[in-house]
Amino acid sequence: MFESISGHKRQLELLEKALRNGKLAHAYVFAGPEGVGKKTVAKKLALELIEASSFSDLPKLSPDYFHPDLLEINGAEGIKIEQIRELAYKLSLKPYQAKHKVALIDHADQMTTEAANALLKVLEEPKSYTFLFLITSNPNKLPKTILSRCQKITFGPIERIPEVTDETLEADRLYKIFMSNSKVDRLISAYDMAGFETEEIKKIFDLWLNQLQQNLQTQASKALAKKVSQVMLARKFLDQNVNSKLLLTNLMLKT
Image (tube, rainbow, N blue to C red; front, side, top):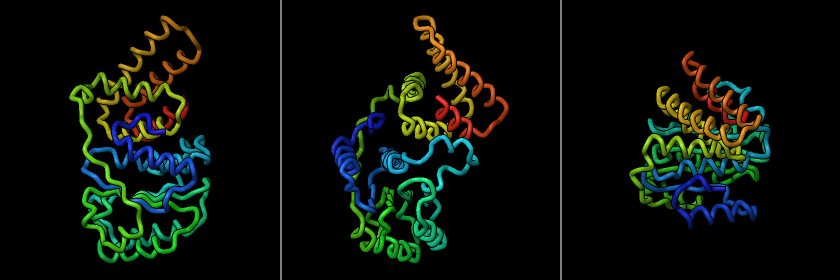
C-alpha cells in the first residue's frame, strides 16, 4: 500500500494494519518536519478510503475539483472559522460517491482560535463515515482540546540520499509508478507532478518516451505502443498550455 513512500516503517505498518482491520481512528494528527512525507501518507490513506468510488469519473471533473468526498484545506496562509464551518457542513452530508468522506487539513496549526473551536465540535461528534487528517509541523501550536481528540502520529526526519533528487532518477521513479497497476499511486504522482514547472514535466515525458521506446525494441506490444502514444500526446498538449493538473490526471488514469 505504501510501497512508493520511503522511511517511516513503524508508522506506515501501524496505519496499514488499522486500515486493513477497519480500526482507523476518525481523526489523526500527522506531525513532523516539513518535507518528510506526512501529507503524502495522508493523501494515500484518503485515496484508499474512497477507492471504492469511481476513479473513471475523475477526468470529467474540473481541473481544480479532485473528488466530492475528499475535502482539503491548505492553511499555509491561515485557516478561518468560515473555512471550518464550510468543512463541517460538507462532512455532515452523506458521501456522494464513496463509502467515506475524508478531510485533509494541511498546516492545521494555523487555525484561528474560533476555527479550532468550530473544528472541536466536529471532532466531538464524528459521523461514522468521516475521517479527518490534521497535518502540521508545529503540533504544540494546536489546542490541547484538539490533540486530545485525535490520534497523533509523529513522522521523524528520514535519511536522504543525494542522488534521489537527480532528474533522471526522479523520472525513473515516476516512470515505475506510471507503469504500475496502482491507480492510487498514479493519482498521487499526477498531483505531485502538477506542482512541477512545465519544462520539468516535458523533460520527464522525454525520459519516459526514451524508456518506452527501448522497451518496445525488446518487447513489442500494443500496450506499450499505446503508452507511447499517450505520453507523446500529453507532451504535445503541454506545448499548448493545457492545465497540467488535468492533463496529468487524465494521463495517469488512462494507463
